[in-house]
Length: 407
Image: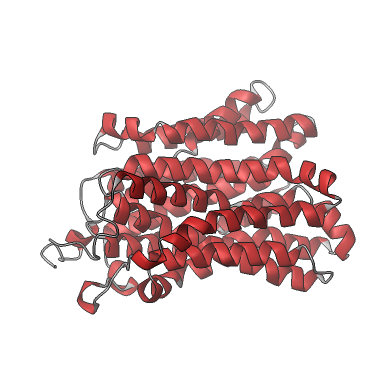
């Protein structure tokens, strides 16, 4: 079988270093618009007279944009190419982040945020096919590196935005500073525009979403990604409040949330070794599910007894995120297949994932306690185990669609 696109560089060592660096820099930028806003949200609300309802819309925008714009990414990549799409991602991120720091109207602020998040949504989807196109022999390694870069980008923007705001003169400057990072990340992609990669250069090689959705593997990938993302967004949105309601101080709850992210980075970097160790057996999916379920069970039954342990377990269980992204490329034969499966998995997966934080809040309001939401989060770990078992099998997307002999 031939590849769905010409070899982008037939790359020299220098070429691989350039594209690898570009992919990592792209990943670092994909959570800047999200991670930077939460820590200065109070100041933003005060200056823009933003109500709690509007602030709620702002905090919900990431998962909505990741879903809506993620689904529309396939056409962009097909027409423009992966490198031009990556450059567009960073242009949108820089533009949205910079302009929202200048406006005085809350609705315009939301629209500028949508621009930045639209870029991030496209970036989410094109990372797996970029890795498939440039590093088909190093998918787990490069996927783990960009997964760690995503986490590091989110953590760094959360930690550094307030000090930047203090040093530069206010929240506007603190937010705008991250546009500079996007411009820096854009530079290597500009160098590579003349050697672009198209995920599906000819009609007979394309995999429309309607066709991909006929595959049991695609549905397993979609539900796996949705379950782990729903749990993750519920975790980031509600974990601190759950712990403070249990009697832990605000500062300690924030530190526990930071611990969750910190644990995830080294685990993500160890994924290539773990995947070589486990092969095509579903042990990793089961492990992530058990870690996640145990963490939430600890929060439910003994939140103040060993809260650092529950946070560490949840952080380790969060390795399901990078593993699921890695499996998008591992379970496809071509760049076209990877792109189509990535759009299906992330676009529709994020749409379902939005039910996570919303459902936790709604169940808490309806029941007056955290018991029902936590039981549901434990159940989501079961979904990760079941769908992960299917995804771990050495079956390719194209084969499930009867395309194994398609050139």
